[in-house]
Image 1 (cartoon, helix red, strand yellow):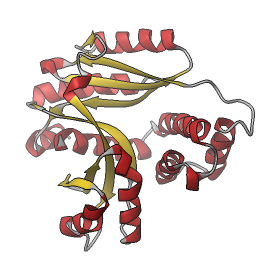
Image 2 (cartoon, helix red, strand yellow; image 1 turned 90 degrees about the vertical axis):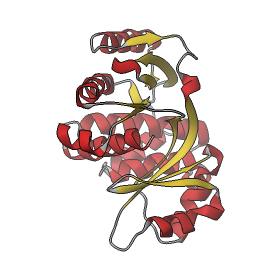
Image 3 (cartoon, helix red, strand yellow; image 1 turned 180 degrees about the horizontal axis):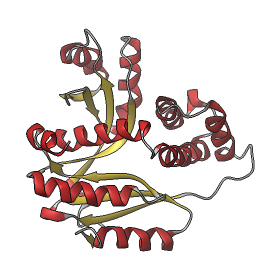
Length: 250
């Protein structure tokens, strides 16, 4: 579990500073629009919107872009599309399980593009339910390591709020909880004066498949190809890559 989380966190950091920033912004704008549509424009009363906006701000998205996305989603400004959430399932190299979460306004386009990306990169599509049973829906909060911040301090801050575990990912801590406790755990961190990088409802694997360098390279290439698609919001997988293998690929 921690191997995939560490890789995903590293990818997120790199995406913010490289040429994919525009694509990251586009995905985050969709998430903001959907959150505003489902729960309204008031961030205090809409924790999903609050977390989506917080993530966008951490990526240095301009405030005007965020404001317009909220207004479009809430119906206060024209131009919003009817985004629908679609989940796809599949397998990658070495039997790695993959779940693909999309926000799309065209189901047929998404299905076609994902099938091409998966099959051209050594993967195969799977029927709904054939992969998802390997994952559990969890709340995941990423806390960046700063001077003086220890795992014990993070655990102390969130334990009574419903957190299940705190994992050391190297450059950050991962706080795991039930999705219904996400707001409470995130609030507990804020009350303790601990800043966090992101708070999301995510899918974490119940079992992981360890990969060597060759297997990891193939899986990373597959996930990169999937994430390049405009409709894809998140890709979840159950691979585990050791620090040594990660270092050999950097």
